[in-house]
Length: 485
Image (cartoon, rainbow, N blue to C red; front, top):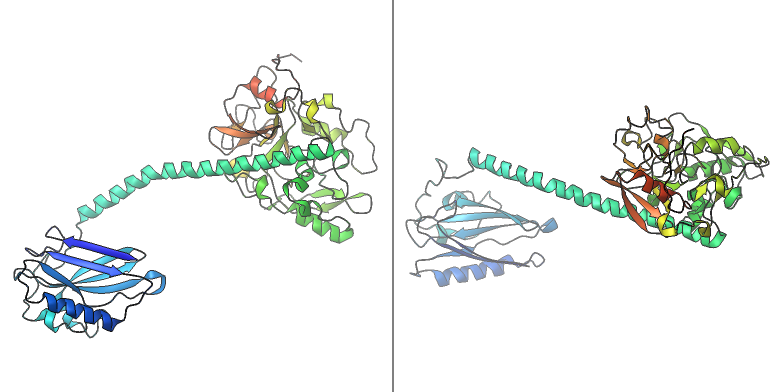
């Protein structure tokens, strides 16, 4: 419902000299009033006002508001003048969703076009009797428009407002994305906590890189899939975890390919990307159980990718270490696999993970998960980057794990922004150090979850020793000293 009461005087662009215009409008967009009833009312108002000597002008609605689709309406108003110095005009009004456009139309022009004008009035005789020609208000045509200077001023003001508002809008959107990313980390960490509660250990990070999750091999050292694959049942993704279970041959291969290409919203930072699936430029085969007790390779042409990595602690070159000890078949026994807890300092490693009671520095002081660094140019998989080229359910490798390594002298593993220049720590993004870094698309810092489920925002310029201690589960808070090798 809209009720409008407007008083117009000489300040209007369409100056009516000494005339005063008083218009009262009542319009309900959902009720159609019969034209006959409205015209009868209008004529009654006009008759009652006729002959009045009051120095005011009355406005009589001669048409009716018509409600079209989406609230579009149009109408016509007659504005008469009590003073002979003023001229009678019609107001043409077009309204859409609360926005109105009006135009003053000389009475004689509208009356002459009444037959062809869809807004024509029914009985204009009493309104146009003895009317002189309309005055010239803004030029030879009697119309008044914007000047070029006025138009430029309006454009400049709009440009200034946009320039002021855009940074605020972008900051608000980034704050919303960061909040979403925080919720993702929170949910994933709660999944890890529930895994530890049910199985007695945090989820292991799987076997070496080309292995993917096997739905028939449970969790722990027997599971070749990543830590994310192990917690799927605890983040309401049991169906994804079980895809391929009980199947063999080509049917199992098709299901595993479908599973590896399935993105998860909880596994991706909204400031970065949606998770795909993205094509693998170089192709490559993944390795998983074939349903017959052994493992077989299958082609991995596209893969969904995640943006979060588990903390392996104060370690470097961990990808190569896992490759050297990981089995290449289910019936293969390797003496060094899985490594013992004293061979890594984080919470999860190649084929193994720790219990909560083994995190002696405290759950609230030890990193569980964090955003991993990905060059902004490599978000979509082309160009290919060695640390972001496999599916997120793939086993232990730099696609799914990262470290807080610090040698006590050179800070090479601090979290950095995705657009940061790495020339100071590596000659190429495919060197070992860039593939081991935490990082984010957020300005100023990177999000990490701690083992108690809390989320911390760590600045990019965090102290290297403090960051290293956050990754080490049992260093006792001692400062690491640089040792020459």
